[in-house]
Image (spheres, helix red, strand yellow):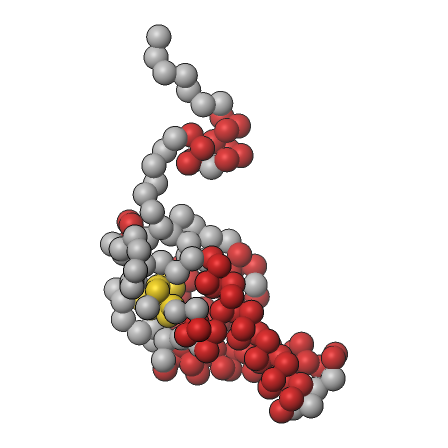
Length: 153
């Protein structure tokens, strides 16, 4: 008798890896290394960086510079976050939070993303939901739409 097949609920609930299918490491099918510079930046690094950037934009700039109250700090903070993100990622490829967590945003070929890609990525990142839906290469919908990826430096 042949090997026992997994139940369909195992693959549906646990994903393809639970069925014993090897999908490789994140970024392998994109030609990226498994570890070190150029490898896909993990979820922890990305969350840490966005928290740092959000705190800087909301607390330091919106509340400190613009003297925004609690109700206004959220939308002013979001506007400052989007502006800083477009400016910094569009020119340097990274924000302060990304620099602290040692990764940058790049096109799939490793080059600096263009202004249109950064604008699309920023808009979708500010909506939050596209950034929370990931593929097997740990690229959110915002990365896929912009043709970018977060890679370690």
